[in-house]
Image 1 (cartoon, rainbow, N blue to C red):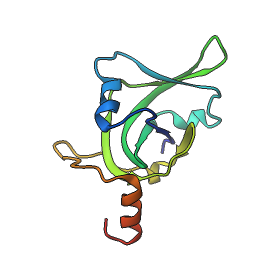
Image 2: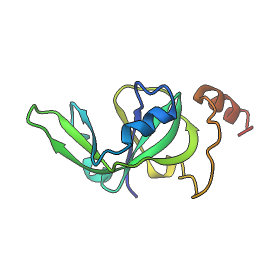
Image 3: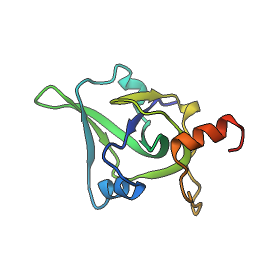
Image 4: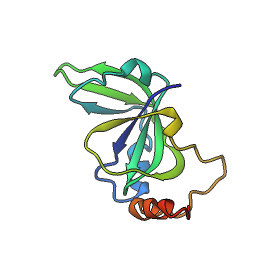
Amino acid sequence: MPLHLTKIAFGAKSYADIENWFANRPRVSLTTRYCPKRVEELEGGSLYWIHEHAIVARSPIIGFAQLENGRWSIDLEPRLIRVHSRPKRAHQGWRYLKDEDAPPDLAEGDDAGDVLPGKLLGKLSKLGLV
């Protein structure tokens, strides 16, 4: 089972902003200061995007490459796959996400509907309402 990463969609005011980051781009990559220590386990994994305290989508990871300035590039497939929203608190940088903890993809034709804010989703799930 692959390991995944989570990352805040910093600067995105809506899910549409995240979609625009991927629109008409042949390549998508992020830079980070350090290479993940568990990089071998991330092969076949995805980067899960967090927006408003909830995981909302994922992008499959293609690979990692060291840049000339010593930083690392996380190369992603230029597509965004909607997932069932799941609460996730904010963090800096990226964090690991086990495969069994990753939210499932939305089925073809499923509508995500209005995504509840992460804080509200977290409270409702603690009460067993979602």
